[in-house]
Length: 367
Image (cartoon, rainbow, N blue to C red; front, side, top):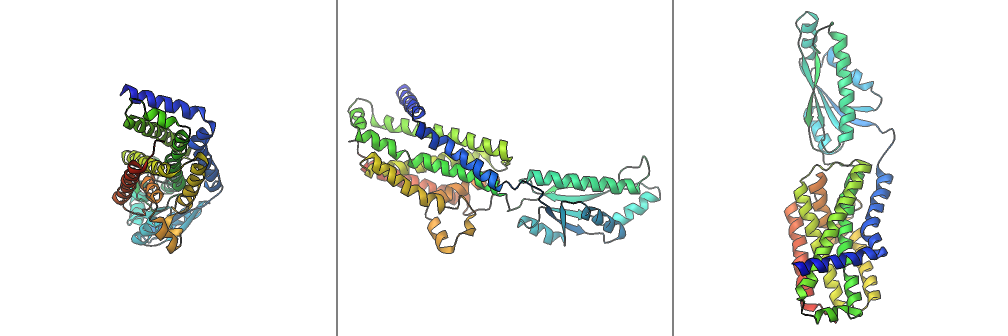
């Protein structure tokens, strides 16, 4: 174990001395997050579309609805509770306000001296924290204003707000992109591992190390351990920028997300080892890695939803491991709509890892 850790530390020092490697490993993904975040963060005076369900159908409920219509940033959409909840789940509305049946009776009872309260139901998406807070504030202000207009001094508020949650399949562009860019960074971390391996073989370093009493599996294990450590650091940096700068909310299963980080890193590291098995020169390795990563980046749905792609490209994307890593990270981190079930994502990544490792174990050359 001491030898393995020593090799890993040596590899880590080599990485930190390579400025190009540091740039592509750490700063390039963060630049992507910042660039796309600024482009798609949607700052400005955007309006929020909310569904309104009037279950009372009286003059009192019409007064409450008119108060909501007077909020400048709210766009109201009327409908039944079932229709508006379905619209929210589909991303057509950001929240649903339910004006309850019995509001008029509560108003009459309160005016006659019998204090009675009733609750507006507000459905918001826990994944869209900022929107939920804005809508909740507006609903609370309208409710308080209505209560003040009906009740006399010292009377409890007639209209209260009951907060409900309803998950939506619609997420912001930035929220979609941050775990996707993490997937891209893990892919690059793995496939670019082919370049230093080919470089070391070309310079005879692998041959000399292979001739020492040191077991070869320790050389391989130290390389894997280094890349997994870098994967963990990359994850913290990318998610940290996403949370601190663009306020994305991680609402999924973080333990599951961590599993996908290491499974994805392992799968692409195995792919990098497989590429290194067949490449002879550093220049050749650099060119081939670039050729491999381009279709992975642009045909796997990491920059835009998978369903936006034409049918024939979706068929191609379903063959690529980055499709399933991006999908697994988005589902487990931000509850994004799925391309495939999480078990399928994990299974396909594991299959890629096993097949690539088997090929590289059979074909890898130390000299």
